[in-house]
Length: 368
Ligand SMILES: *Cc1c(COP(=O)(O)O)cnc(C)c1O
Image (cartoon, rainbow, N blue to C red; front, side, top):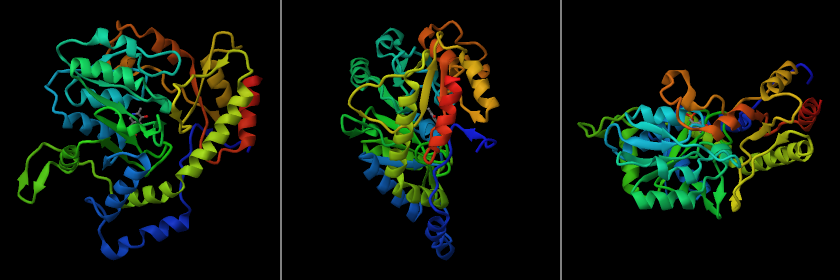
């Protein structure tokens, strides 16, 4: 164990034999993609598991978000209020739709968008709010919906981190006009690469079906400028296999997470986020805040862990709004809380099957 690199995450996988057994029928049908049998089966099973009315599978979470935004047909150059404290995908999806991200600050408590700062950012060009359930922490859904209703805005949630999260005993994908999930290899549930959009209006299903398949309506008719965002059958089968074990996976993550917290909570200068009540969480990440009264700063702790083969991550630093590709366009936006968190955040390794001995080693290093 001493020389083995420990990464922040490790993909859950079914047993080799069960996956091989499950893909065998493909050698009979030779039907490998284009919304095949397993694609349909996974959509049905995910609808049940996520407790949502409608779901469209996608090739990845990013395309799920790009196409969910495209499906609303917002006017060009319209504005979407969003958070900079997220993975770059959230911001890219807005810009790649020829829309303008308007960055709103986040809350210290849980890193989600600060609902009390949204209204100030609304103007006649605003069409939607795109919050992120960052780490699976649930945004203030009621307040956000109230604002959206008042100003006739759409709400699209980036729920990439929130697979299996319940809010008030309902699947998180039921809130807002649409939500997107990521099934990337690094996420709580994976299809190797994959994602989905969830929503309640069935018309949206047909729209997304066309958008993910080049806008094809029938053999001779193309009605939309679509793209290719279809999930293939190998990935769908991976999803079906992983879904069988998902409850065990989350249970194991919970055990590891609670062990971390029980040991870290008494260390001076190491703090945690607090979560909105009414949440059944998925233990997607183990984020800690390295505060000013800890004996090193965040970057020093990150390096120190790395020297000891522990590869933690600064999720999310820098803020997406500060990224090089945006050439300082957003540098004057007041994002002081988001910046404060981004300077202190460190995400520790957490995944199914993480050894308690490894967690002990990480805790010892942090205790010093
Ligand atoms: C992972 C992620 C995405 C993108 O999902 P992919 O499946 O990797 O394309 C989008 N938003 C957030 C917040 C993510 O963490």
